[in-house]
Image (cartoon, rainbow, N blue to C red; front, side, top):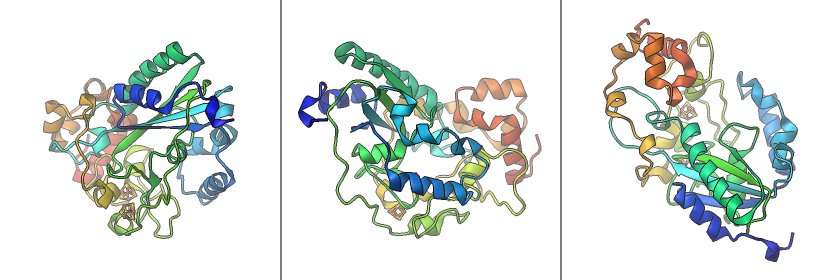
Length: 309
Ligand code: SF4
Ligand code: SF4
């Protein structure tokens, strides 16, 4: 495609993204993700580092090219939303899970943005917020948002990594934004050294989910593997981001939904232990914590505090 043929300029898309509450937005031309990325992903799968997330083995053709996922896609619009919060809470819960579930928050905002895009420039869209086989971080790098750190997180220069990504696949053509030059986090190694579970690799191999406390406390079903130590985490883990120098100047999110409510901030382990399934649903239905169900949260509670539900 000739770069002069775009119908929507990148600044117009970025303004819409900013209106939706995104802190950063980039655009890449749709196409295959490239052999190197495909190979890396396959190696990660064959090493079993995706743990029991079998769904990651499926739909590889769709994952490798968003035009297979949403036929007619010509532009991949990647938006990053800040979820950082510094309000104190009682429970050791990862920052992203202290407010509302980003799947709801981002989808609502990106659907509005996608409608505006179609009204103003035509075409069709599909909004993806961790809901489809799509290489969100690869596309974020491709669209110039940042680079992938040794901690496996997307790092946005000057802003850090406390961001969640949402993608709009669009059949229209937008001006693309360029990948950053020399994208490298600096490889100070602090994340690898700080990881309490040895899930990161100083050589840059992708995360080993089998060890990662974020995976184990959220995604893992059933009993923990023998020898598991949650190292003080109840739900999720931020350690490899907390120690990263790129997050030194992380600023609190302007998105109110990502901040903890007073009720959540005051919750103590005994309060969780006392929850009925109905009360759990009422309290966490809109929270990322709902993902691990009451059984998973109870299992984590028992392991961490020796409190039974
Ligand atoms: S802690 Fe250091 S090595 Fe790890 S992602 Fe941050 S800059 Fe890179
Ligand atoms: S989230 Fe925690 S356990 Fe997982 S890689 Fe990062 S520091 Fe390690």
